[in-house]
Image (tube, helix red, strand yellow):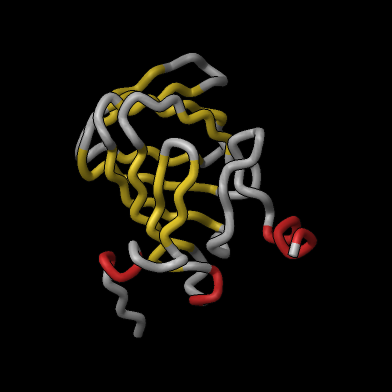
Length: 133
C-alpha cells in the first residue's frame, strides 16, 4: 500500500513546475501501478499548447474555469469543476485557463517524474529520457 500526502509532495522533487503549470506527481512509473497520478494546477491567463504523442491522459477539473480547444477539429469545450476530458487519441489541444484550474490527472504509460513539455507540447517517451541521462 502506498500512502502519500499532497502537501509533502508539493515540497519535494515530485512537484514539477514549468511554463504555465505546476504538477504534484503522487504516483510515478517506479511505483509500479501502470499509470501515474498527478494533481496539476494550470495558471490563469496562460495558453498551454499540448500534444501528448507518447502518453494518454485523463483529466478531472476540480476547481477553476477555462476552455480546451481540440486543434484537429477547432471545437472548444468549457472547463469547470466536474468536467473530465480524456486525450484518448493523442489529441493536439490548447488549454486556456480563465482562473487557476486545479486538476487530477492520470497518464498511461506512467511518467517517470522528470518530464516537462517539449517544443511540441509533449512529454518525451521514457526511452528518450533514459538516453538523455
